[in-house]
Length: 157
Image (tube, rainbow, N blue to C red; front, side, top):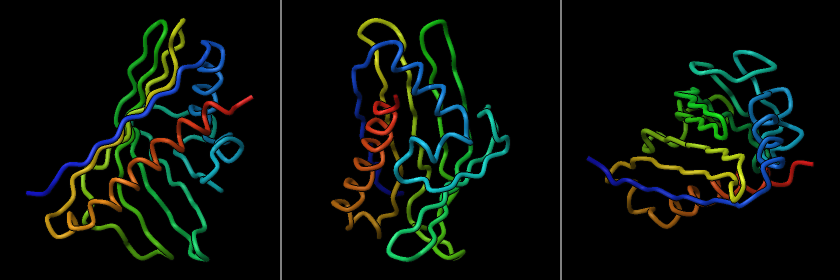
């Protein structure tokens, strides 16, 4: 049994801005245009993200190729909202698995395109007892990941 970490951030935006963010998010070929950390993205389908799809985000950090794999766990949609859950399937550096102590990483992005709406990102994960000694770094990682999604999606023109 480990420790659970969560972080939620949100940004109020106009309905038009939220719709632009959702459109860009649901189109994998557009990710490198708006996502400041994803230099490349491979997806099950190049032009749409649907439930059950797999995503692989590639970044170069300190000279190493980092690959982060995600499963689109669920998509819930209504007239004025869309909620997308991404389940972390693992991360590797130069094709070697890393971050093995982080389990059940789940990022939920909610797009609320109505008056007083916006984008909310909620991230959660379980961490092994051994890794929980790094709670400061894990909290920082969760915060940075959630805030980066909100910041990038809110900056789309």
